[in-house]
Image (cartoon, rainbow, N blue to C red; front, side, top):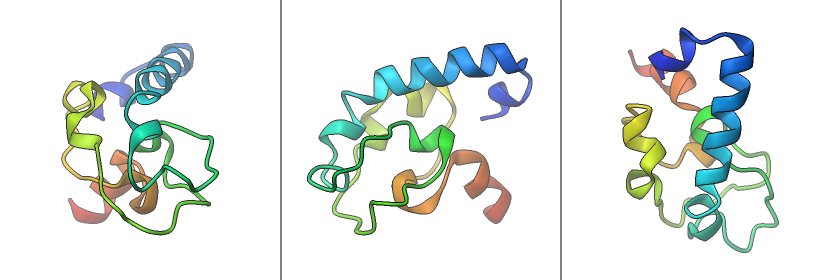
Amino acid sequence: MQKMGNMSQEEMKKQLENVKEICKDYCGKCPSYTGTGETKLGFCATGKSDIIKAEKGCLCPECPVYEDMGLRWMVYCTRGSGSELSDEID
């Protein structure tokens, strides 16, 4: 997450689009996401979903974004973005 903090607005926008593209294969197949009607992706970067309420499993640690962004938590869709969680815990 620290990587994104050092980026320009344009770089952050491009990175977020990349995250969402990768997340199609992970968020879109996650047990907590599937069947909820949610269409947003990339919760690790954008924050928790207003739609997803139940934690039924998590594929975040399997996602390449997880390692690339140096993420440490799971179920970002219900708990918030990596930076939000970092602020709460650190």
